[in-house]
Length: 375
Image 1 (cartoon, rainbow, N blue to C red):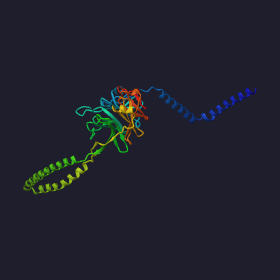
Image 2: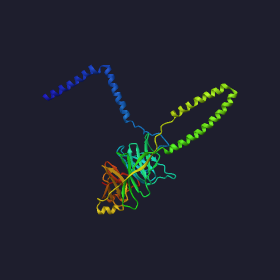
Image 3: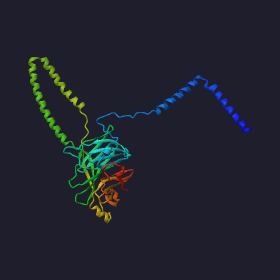
């Protein structure tokens, strides 16, 4: 009996509350309009969310390369560099193509075809390094340094420069960057010797001797032209005097004002040019292999290095033929090696990703499965 009484009392209270709420609240016309407007907005948003929108198509541009399925275009990889800064892979191929691939390895973000025609054909790439977010250096086996920069969202190639100071006996490979000295460095194995060394190269301004000689020649020619002009001007002035004194006086005034105008114009028009630079060999650091074990020392005599990776103050190079990973201590000038798994046999290079060293074991296509950890 008590349960029925409580139930009926509760139901009665609810009904009375609803009636009173409608009478005192929802009977107001303004409130009814606001409620109706709210429900109308909800209906509009729901219809927009459920509607199927057509895919957005990018504007057609003949110069743009479709990069959605361009992973298939990456064949015969020469060099790979992973950038933690931009979270992407940078790839150079034997066809002189430069690719930026997304960090998950599923999409090509950008493509750049390097010029590879004429007498200055590119040799094999032996190293690549991102120095800044928008600046990448690459080097070829013949010592050509290639500069690739990002400009307005696109990668572009700058004029190439030959590294000066290298000799024909040098067998260079790899490319690194010393931020303290702002120098690039490479590994070098002298031909027919077991000697291995670090080569440091730096960018220097070209001394303006040649440009000064050109300027002196130009100034001599300009003086000759000025003499000829003054001579012709005197003759013209003599003829003008015999005809009209007024005309000659105006010409003389013009001649007096002309040098001032000629001096002012070049100063405003001439822009400051950036000094020309060149990359030159700065120093050679020989590496001592005295601490190696006898077995590694024997393999080191047949050393054929690929790749160059920097990690925690050490430099790592791989000899894929002998399956040895070498560690270089630049401060002490020493090198030592340890055996690695046969999975890296015949690899073409290395790169660092998330502080882990990977070897490129299948350069035919770009595939994350083709990169094997050698740690």
